[in-house]
Image: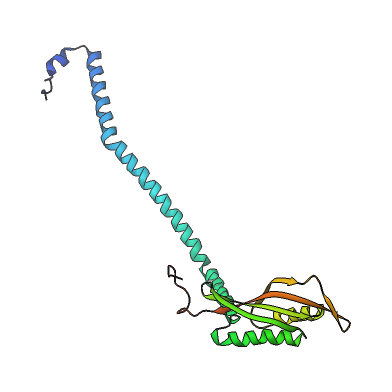
Amino acid sequence: MSPLPKIDVNIILKLPLWQRFLILGVVWLVLIGSFYWFLYSAKLAEGSTLSSKLERLKNDSAKKKILAGDLPKFKKEKEELDNQLKQALARLPNEKEIANLLESISDAAKGSRLDIMSFKPGKETPKGFYAEVTIDMKVEGGYNNLMLFFEKVAGLPRIVNINVLNIASSPKEVRGEIMLSATFVATTFKFLPQAEAPQPGAKK
């Protein structure tokens, strides 16, 4: 690296006054430019970053204040949801109550003066904390008796859904009453304790 050229001050002093002012102006511009480049611009960028960070912190603080203000509302909603869940679980029979529920469905059919031609409980299908229990049924009886059966099933304290209803298209008359043959799937739900519920990733 070559050494910096030496500046003879006497030469500058001998220059005309306007040239000396010109050189002084150039020196001031160089000094100001260096100050801006090495100090001010860096501080300016740092200040901009800090300003953005401060704005984000203010926004986060405002959001947290809003959440803190809504906390009693969220607690109340959680309590309501917990109560709804307890009520829903109360309508899901456990293992010991399933047999009684199946008997109740059978009794509802008999109480509606329907002849039960087929009553086949199916396999349980786990759905998380509960399992679906299906019963394939075939009954014969009058239309009003069939509707009465559906009303009784809907009035059971446990949840029972009637699906895949199929009524034979060729009804027959018995003792002056039109008799229908109907097949359907009655679906109820069984509560699974945590120990029985399938775990995520577990093999079926």
